[in-house]
Image (tube, rainbow, N blue to C red):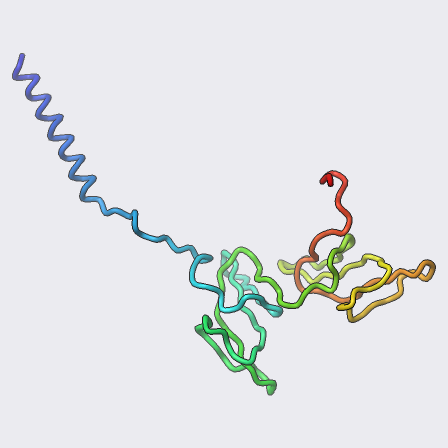
Length: 172
């Protein structure tokens, strides 16, 4: 009877030793860093007015076509801007789920009646009738004469921004 018990103990000891050796031989990834496409080095540009989205690449990747006096230091592919205007364009692609922020501010601070195209990055205009157009609105029209109400006709490439009037279901 004792011989049978010793055999089971020996087999169990060999099994535990084998599992310990296998665990020790497995490479450890505790110190490895996993880099996602969006966590790679910094963007070559902070904001962009003329951004292009690659339609065939998922997740989205973006290229900024703004012309600058010189390319940023983080830019790896700098080219002269086409045409006679001079300047340079950074041709790097940035992979990001989010559209890069625009440099030029919206012509309005808030908008309740935004009219936008159905593109991924839309062109929008605000159809709100206000007492006076904002100072950065370049095309302002008189919408009503009595009382005088105005509407800014500028288009903006990007999302329209926050609403002026809070929605009733959102609370204060």
